[in-house]
Length: 259
Image (spheres, rainbow, N blue to C red):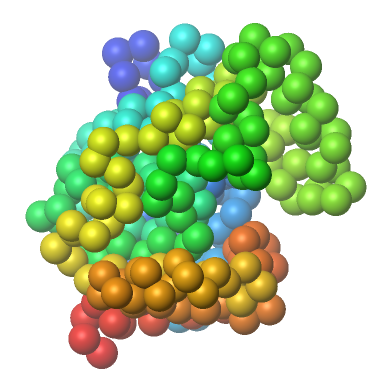
């Protein structure tokens, strides 16, 4: 694992950088997750093995630092990731992102249009969080209440019904989870959906077969977004069908290359 200093306070993100000759893929994880937890099995699949694969833990998650005085907005995550890809000299790269990580990825993509080959999103947040989503629930609590009790309750409640996510969430900063969730509730201007539609590269959106939304698929296809489906999986497709997700990512890359 490697580390990268994101600011003048010496805060660091940590990441895996797996070698490959083909275009680098930057993996950005969702809420309460970590690249080091979600994506090793996906990234090791035969169809992606020739790519350089960079699996990051966002600040506040996984093995990365968890400062309490950081803003943790979606915009702030995108800012340091922009510096990160520039410092790694990724003059051509692919972004893959899941769920709320998709909002971070889209703000990053908006800053790095000229250096991107394509963007591949899996069930990404394109609009501000709505009632019924975890980020809406977390982001509408008072931060003090969430940090001082509700966070632990959420981890405990999910330990049996969604143990993989509970495990990853338990090592996140409760402050970071609260603040990025509030950022998701607040949304962005332009919206992440508008950014996606405006990107000049070819774009792919992945659904899990069990969580496919027909109306959303139709809307995305109307804007010339390529759609891929991961069989036998829902929203947590990296854990439910890692091989299927890797193959869907690769199909998105081949689509962008006209193959």
